[in-house]
Image (cartoon, rainbow, N blue to C red):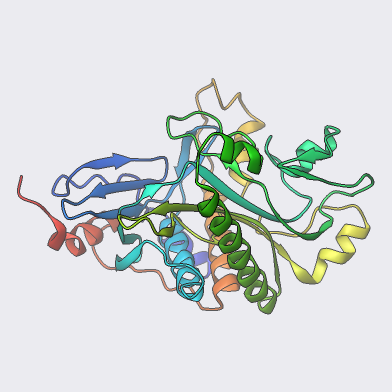
Length: 326
C-alpha cells in the first residue's frame, strides 16, 4: 500500500471487537476471544497496539497483517506440527480448536540478542554465563550468531504476572510438563525455527529469535497455538546489512515498530502517567512498517479487506453463522 492509501484509510481500525451475539467473551490486550459451546474458539485480532501493560493506540491493518502472516506460517509448517486453526472466516479472525495451554513458553534464539529482562543478551551483559540450563562462553558480542539455536523457556503466567526464566530441570521438577512432552516440545520448536530461518533467508531475512505457545487437545496431543513467526512474536533482521553492521558494532537493520513506544517513553512515565495523544504520522509510519514486514516475509502484496462500513461491521457479518441464541 502507498502512503496515500494508508492515509486514506487511517480511520479504518478495529479498536473493540465486542460482539454481543457471540458467547463467552474474553478480551485480551490485542485479541478478543469467544468460546463456542462445541469446543471451538474464535480469536479476533484487533488493531490495538499494546506496550507498558496498556493500550497506546490502534494501527491500521495491524490485526489483518498479523493474522495473515501467521496463516502463511501455519500453512508452511503444518507438516512439522499440527496447529489449532480450523478456518479463517475473515482476514482478522481465526476459528480454532480450544486447547489446554501448556504453562511453558518456548523461546528459540539463534543470536545473542534481546532487550527484555529474560533475554540472553540482557542476562549476558549483566555478567551471567549460565542460564536456561546452558553455559555461554566469555567474549561474545551483541547480536552475535550462536553456534546453534537454543531454547530459552520461560514460565507462562496466566494471571498477569511476569514470565520468569526456567531451566529444563526446573520445568520437570515443577511438573509443568512431562518428560515426554518436554522432549517433544524441544524437537518441535527447533524444527519450526529451522523451517522459519530457511524460508526467511529465501526472502533476504534473518529470523533471529521467536516464541512459540503450545497446548494439548482432548486426546493429549501437543498442538501449536497462538501465532507463529509474526513481526510481533519474532525478531527479523535484514540479511544484506547484518554482517557490516555487526562488524561496526551497530544494531542490525530490522522491522523496527517501536516508534510509538519510544515516543511515549520520552514524554512521560508510561506506567503511571496519562498517555499523550500520539501523532497520526507516527501511527501511519508504524502501519507502513507492518505492511513492509508482511510483504517481505510472505512474499505477497498486502491486500487490505475494505468490505463493510467498518472493520467490525465486516467481521460481525462474517461471524453471524457462529452466533448463539441469547
